[in-house]
Length: 347
Ligand code: NAP
Ligand code: ZN
Ligand code: ZN
Image (cartoon, rainbow, N blue to C red):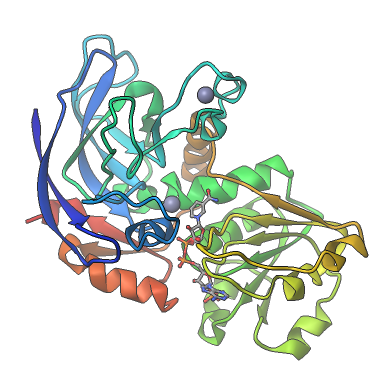
């Protein structure tokens, strides 16, 4: 067994505290990873606070993991000790359903095995990346390109792929007007990737203080969504809107900004319903869609793309002991634009 140091929530909504446990030694196809950095995703906060209603405690969150391979099983062929690698939101899937066979393990019909807070086939709950080590089947491990810094690569494993995948799926790029709602971890990656793909990007935000940053990230427009006059001027403007908002909000006001037959893509996953009027769609044949992270192949493609094009997250690296303070700041919208925990600072 591998002794592991971590930070865990002992009950729903409790502050995270140091927690020790053990992981199994790597099996024949497993890679043991010494974790260097782990990003803080808003999903970690929804989970710890049990806002999605299936919290299991002690819970060790974290699914934006970058580390070095420390040991490999005898049948591992893709990795060697010392390789810089990543682990994202899931660590297994059934491998035989149509989406799994298609490389879309994120949509596994039996549910991907999420990196933390998910029951594995033995009924044990997975534990995530706010920890010193993790052991993962090599198929679910990503290669981090050499040119990427380990700390800045971490948020790509969730925020990066969650925004890359829908932009690719809907072929969003040159000639499209893209609105990004919420300038947080996912939102700032949606802006950077949208700009890189050639779209005309606007940020739709509740935070007036983020205007300069939005334009600095390459957005051509910044719209304060609390200002009705500002919204009114953009009615019918956008071909696509990527919505990253983490709480309930006025969906009708946003749908109004789509052109005829435009598409709202939901990636934000609030714990409560976000109501809207059917008229917001039917009067102009608009579409409402959703998207969940991305498959392993696409995640590798995204990492390689971001390395080649230098599309990198803006991060603030913190010692693990400041995780609770970071959560409070994320909840206040005060993150520019992803917190990353330095796992070497585990007590
Ligand atoms: P984040 O960094 O906290 O960003 C969310 C942003 O939404 C905030 O910065 C804020 O931006 C805006 N916002 C927050 N509360 C709001 C409210 N009440 N009304 C309007 N706007 C509000 O969070 P994140 O890590 O990017 O995650 C965003 C959401 O995506 C979370 O719900 C998370 O669970 C979900 N998620 C989904 C997937 C997926 O696969 N679909 C993957 C990862 C995360 P402004 O200050 O600019 O308004
Ligand atoms: Zn995430
Ligand atoms: Zn499957």
